[in-house]
Image (tube, rainbow, N blue to C red; front, top):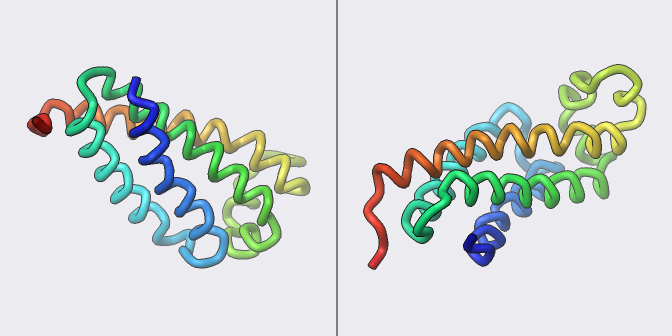
Length: 131
């Protein structure tokens, strides 16, 4: 496993974590993520020698840590700009947004890990390796 590239690529997740607190509207956030996933998949396919899916999955898990941490720290600002997040939380978690983010965040990390891992695996079939 190339932990250096995993941590380097996860910096995009840290940037997005801060960006989504108040700068990036929820409506266009998926466009940013799709662009980041495509770039990450390309880099993983270019740099790594094997385990492309696992590298992509691990990048998303580290992203999850960054994102949940930043969103919990800045929960008030985040929830003011992302009302749909609170509305979509199950039951009583909507009344405790920080707890809700801590509980649901890892699920999103796993789902996005499956997506990024798949992107990285497909990219590994399409991209020529760096020499």
